[in-house]
Image 1: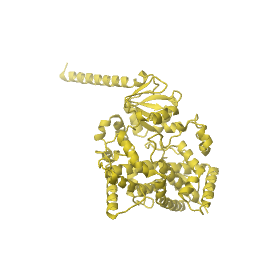
Image 2: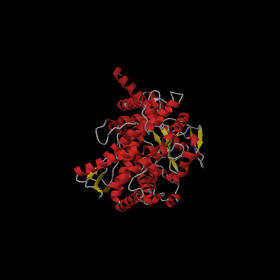
Image 3: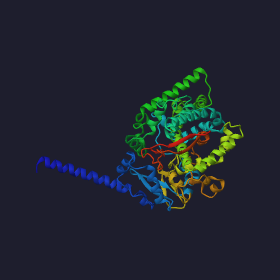
Image 4: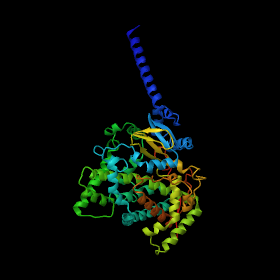
Length: 504
């Protein structure tokens, strides 16, 4: 036999041994849940499924809904991310157990964070353990009713500019307006003024850098999604795959923005009722400067931006779309707004917004049908955990996923789930179903810290738009509102096209 022939045989043998080893590894890994007598999804070659999600060929939310249907009757089931086991919870009582009663065993989200090397990762959502507990306690006063009421004029100024833009766009396009882009720019303005203390003029200037930086971060790519998945499976890689490396322009922009804002305020003794002001106060009082410095301040404001940009805009957009489809409900909403504001001579106030029961139920029903939060992740921090009522024992580090959106469109809890019905959220209706079947802001100690702020921002924007304009279907309206598979939110790929008529 020739030397080259021998060399080829060696290569083929080595390759065969390698593939056999890989196959054996995944055979063992993919039998993890089976060995625990837990029903599991059929495992595929992990890179194939990851590729489908990362490339946008498969919707992550759609996959969750299918998995939920498979495991609903059992209460939970197993899945895999690469070879890492993930437990899907489908029973609201188990969800309650994990998020509240046994929170001490599942108090982390399980996302990588490295505040020293990757400043933006040091936000409240990512951090864990005692650091999370201390940071949460420091930041909680930001979102009291009194603080939000103090920010009311800042938010309302942005709403008034949004109304002007809607009016202008309606005149330009014979009544047809694409609302998603305007709502995204409105949210950017609100977050700019409340979280970063600046007037970024995204509504007046569609090309404003502040808005584009957020869109860059939220628009996923194959590369960024794949890197994120790698990080969730191989946390030690966090030193090499950082937000700074994935989004260098975004990181530099927001870091410099916070630095210059804080410097200007300190030098000019500027005091403003916003998030920056509270964080500056925390920084002044905190003796451990590594725990709370300008990088950590930037991370919290950036989280505020990312969490509130797409979710608020998409929820208001969906609510307006439902008003166009359900004109009788829109008529009743407008009547409620008009009647309550008549008590304050037409002046909109924080107290008036809080009185609007139907408005609140309409937005709750909107978030039920299309939750801004498709799923909740928790990571087991206890050494072992036995699932109540079973002999299944989980090991430390196990990821638990709660498919929020899938549960909220389950006919078992919400009959005829595709129907838009605000009466699902009357006190009587809510008392008749398990409270953990509706979780748009999460639940338990890690309940969204800004939920009160988000709800108020939603209500104020929605109220002022329905108060001033009537919304109907436009020729360009996409009734399916097909979501963008490259986005983890419910943002429709075609936007929200509506016919807008100014009320007399």
